[in-house]
Length: 180
Image 1 (cartoon, helix red, strand yellow):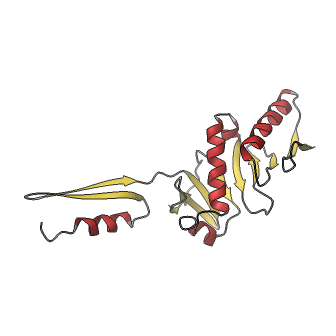
Image 2: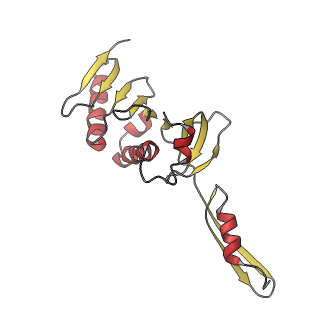
Image 3: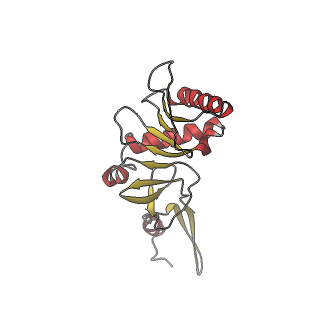
């Protein structure tokens, strides 16, 4: 019991991808308790293969089966960009996580209408809705642009109009392209 190093054991347990925090407690005379806080999968990232990440961007592991994630899938990242998320304070993967959090904060139905966020473009993310609408969001003011997008989609649904693309990259202007 006295030879156990609780801090070393906790560090080893925390090295597992699924573990956020671990604590080891010695209880004399003959008990050791390990308390583990697991990381929770937040969304999937398609970077060559599907990978689960938590809300902070920590890679949890690959997903081999078909699943429906609770948030949009992030695409347009290389595997190197995905693996550097935990170390990099900014970058495309971090921006995608910020965008998902903005969608969830909005409290609107828009959060479940977006199926994918493609970060592979230089002028900002491209969103894809579950109905196949491509949305060019632009590189800034996402919360305001998401609010405009929600209004545009609601108007088009009310009019029974079908749109193929929505371009929100321009300040105070929405460009729609229709089609079937």
